[in-house]
Image 1 (tube, rainbow, N blue to C red):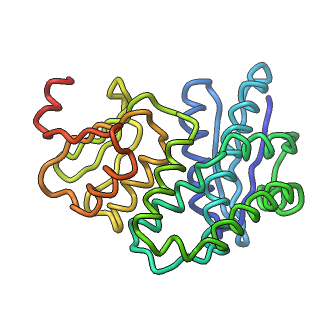
Image 2 (image 1 turned 30 degrees about the vertical axis):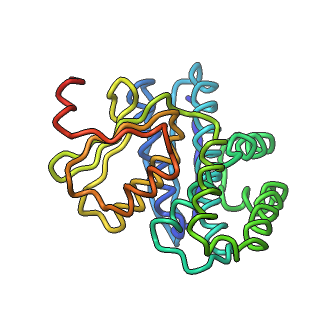
Length: 257
């Protein structure tokens, strides 16, 4: 049997849950076992599989851990170091997500360059002791943003910057379909396979919508919604995605089934 343990502090409980749930789904396909436990402020996620599947699991773990660092850890770094003007919450989260997603493949390359998956990995120790080059890269990004913070107070300038960042993201999806139905906001790929769903009553749902759309990095966006969509959100989405976004009546979704 092959075994591996991922360790984090309970300060990163959401990241540990992401790792556990992703491994749980992966284990269902490849007959692995995964469990998690918390002790003395530390969270461990343990996974085991047949020895013949070791490389398959290591490849999955390398991508999963690099995603966690380049999304969760980068977002936290930006929140702690960016000096933003008085942006509204939707614009602030859109800007943050755009910076998280910008040049993400290079970030992941740096992580995987130093990543070694032997028997266990303390993600925070790895991040602080091995990834100084990555944090230096993020430091330069923050410096550029902070040096130009005065321009971000202008809505027109902010929208232009957001559009530039989003237009230059590496595409991850040909099309993302957002569907508002009952009490849920659902994100689907081009073939209407579910990518993610949120409750429409979630806190900051407007920020969640725009952050998810930027993170999915689609070439085109189709939004099937009723009249309850926040008008400020609609306007910002149109400004950012421009001609790549379509707003359609939610009833039209029946034509896609």
